[in-house]
Length: 235
Image 1: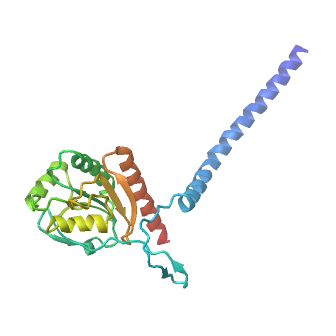
Image 2: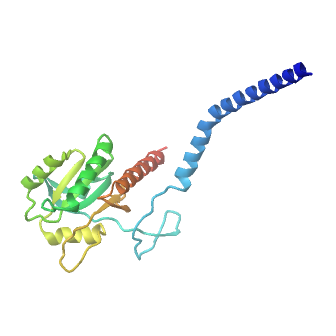
Image 3: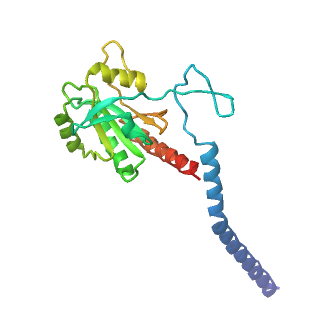
């Protein structure tokens, strides 16, 4: 009787072992498929970035249906740290990360710039991504001052442009009305910790607190989402 029970137990154990092996094999084979389907579904249906600032002017799309028109950043003319003139046309077909800073800022600006060096490092080999930093103190932040600041923080001009407009009012109008940076309109001086994500069509797609690592991590993730969307539009 004991021998018979032992045989039965061994038989059950063998079956359990076979079932366990089958389960492991099944999971190994099916897991990549599950991941692919989840990513495909997630990417298409749940992880699209919003558009900001719908305008009041509706427009018909290609099918004649009325579609929402979203704000687009305006053209600008600025000088970089090497004395070169840059306009929006220099960044056609680019995803842009934009901030407004000044070199004499003792508080949030160095923190933002340090966080942007992380963005630069991640996307340094991606030709479709560029960083633009506009000084809000153009009278002091000359090209030489911007160049020294860029050298201090390891700014790679192939990826990241430090830009100077002609006047404070010009950069204020660009930041406040163009990039929708929140600010006090009384003194006409931008001093914001916000980073702005702009897509290739010049629509604003995100705002991020540039002094916080988690927010900048979110920014880099959402840049990746835009790159993914553009890549799959071609296919």
